[in-house]
Image 1 (cartoon, rainbow, N blue to C red):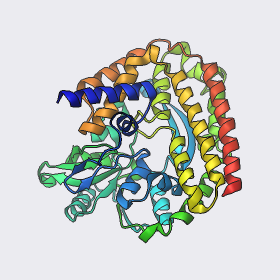
Image 2 (cartoon, rainbow, N blue to C red):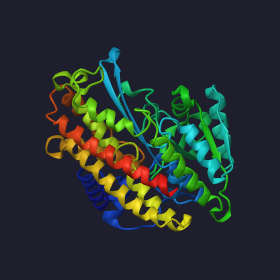
Image 3 (cartoon, one colour):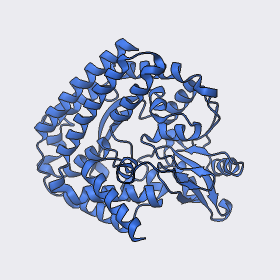
Length: 415
């Protein structure tokens, strides 16, 4: 037990220092290992929540699934909730990041993976369908609200803010009589959620209420993989080359400018007057850009891995050069995250963020004391000036926008 605790501590420390995902930090410390199991279910981990579930259920490599799904994206929205005197920063780093069900449907169709997509407005019908699929031994992709699911131990003001796809693969006890549903959320252990709580969480977000996917087998030998990857890359280039300053590359340019624009309604000097509330936004930058948070980070490294695999698959050696450029861009994002939430000032918050993610991955739920301390420190930090140079962050973002714009233009010439 002592050895396990020491390993957990080392994994958490590395995640907090480097911003690495749980899977990457664990692999660095213990090396490759046999995937853990829960009976017949095998935990494969994963990086991007959406491509990870498709990879786990089809056996296709996650980097290529990510490319087939459209690869990287761009998104920036700063929400202000006057009623709660709160500000919420939303960043999107994957294709169609704001439309989970559309991404899933389009990706599976490209890959030629048969699937059943079920939606209903009724919680009872949704719960009954999930129970029937699991009883028949068919794992399902579901989309619970993170707050409602409970295992992240989020504060109440995040109720209804959404979630990401996870795999429901089994049950513990009779789900009709207080039993649990077993979830796989890119970890090494089952996440156990009471069936009634999961049903409520699945119905919380109107845009994908009670959404459920049951996947079939991918075509033998991944016969559709090459055309799916090429089509996905073209969709990526088309989307990012668009003019939207919320859902395409211009989002990074807009964000870089609003960081120092005191006149704009959404300018950070105006929204975070006197620096109050800024620390929470900067933490959202760090845990959004780095995979230490709830999602997969900026995903430019996963995209690069996919491009390396796609080069021989598509007979396009120049994709290897594109991969190198996106790894460089990934480094620029990492440097931005470090500048946004420097360890010397926010070290404990970074440690607790990593601890929450590590506990979910290795034990199936966040530690109650650690989660409570994290949100207490976040609230306290929001009441004080953050002491971060917004002009520097703006310059870093402008450089990222220029680098990604050039890289996407060159990728468009290849595919």
